[in-house]
Image 1 (cartoon, helix red, strand yellow):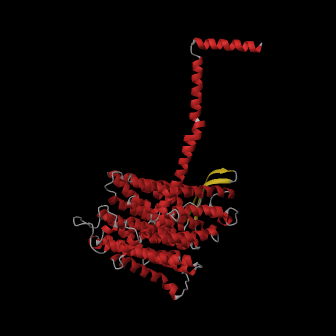
Image 2 (cartoon, one colour):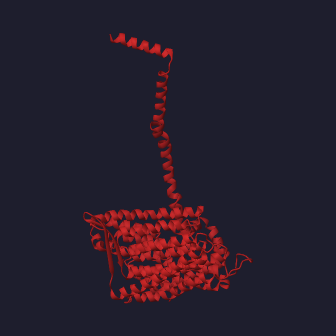
Length: 576
């Protein structure tokens, strides 16, 4: 037990010190404009060299700093949350392996070395999703692993296409890729890989399913590691696929993902799945602004979102612990009276998610919306942006109403209170980040302010749809509009909107049934039919029959001897 505590504390302290060191070096490189590039040649085959490449610039080190800081808080938080687990040492090892894989991906501009971190994230995420070892976790883990394998195959195909350039460091060849005949294929594969990792339509079903993992893992996965890997890859690869049809397709799919996730969260009652769908919505925001040609804004929102989303999951974990593992928000209510610190932190994270002025989400989200509204969007994308912004505030206020206000709904025999300092201290640290990180990052990343000129209507549009969405989300669930009965009257529509447009079904049984029915036909007609008749069983039966005939000929029977003598005599006379 002492060994486990020492490992847990040393891991947390190491990650926290590494985070501070990386942040200081990142700020130094940002001010000086320098980048450090390390390359180690492993093997050279004709004109191609397999090299291990590391790039240490302000972007990679700042992202790595945030990953290590959130990981240290998650490990510290897990000391209380996972205290009843007999295998907490295994859990800590898996989290450290997860952070190591993400670190490989962040500092590698080489597709081969990226594959180490990319595959490592997929493997460790599968181990963490199935951590509780039940049927639901197994199904969720398999969906997560198989969805991510599509991206792994896309990366492998992209590696084979880059072979023609003589190397796999895409930062060096990003200008050459623009003039290649295979540019479309290469960019399509990289974007496909990023879409599977960052759960864009049609690969979004695995993200809510991954909520089967322990809540500290969700805080890590949904803030700064697994789901942001695809966004980070496209930030690095961004110049290659600009001004192509892939950019337009990614913009449409990201906007649809943003809208679909916001809509689905308004019909969901599972606390963790609501937060997971909000992550999906914010990933759509990052991908959409990335496809409009603003990778710096996508990176800014990625960092700001990481802090308040990790805080939101930690607060959700504390609430679930106190609610005796209930995750249905209808069982909650009035928690602000019994868990004031957790309630304050959760409300703070929710307000940052909505883009409330002067919190972390405001600086990145408001700038993204204004830059998007200034861009040459068509009407469909513009409407999706506006609706998704309102829906975000709508499901956030709905969540606040169900969990924080009203009366306690679980029962009278439960003691509900703020958890121990081991769980609340990381929440306080992340709360500070959710308040100050937006302003601090905007000063660091954008020393020159954006010049945004818009009409009064466009300038106030984001605020207007947010206020309208918040009012609808709060008052509709108070019963003023008979919300429950309306949803029951339109049951089919409610099921469609609340089930992510049937994406979980289409990703599992929807694709599986057709392949299984064809496979069943092949098995019955082929493996168990003609192939069996002319293959193994047919050869066996014919050989068996022939051996039986030979065995009869070899028996010591008088009639066989007389018959053979007669045949030989007959042949002799015929030949004469």
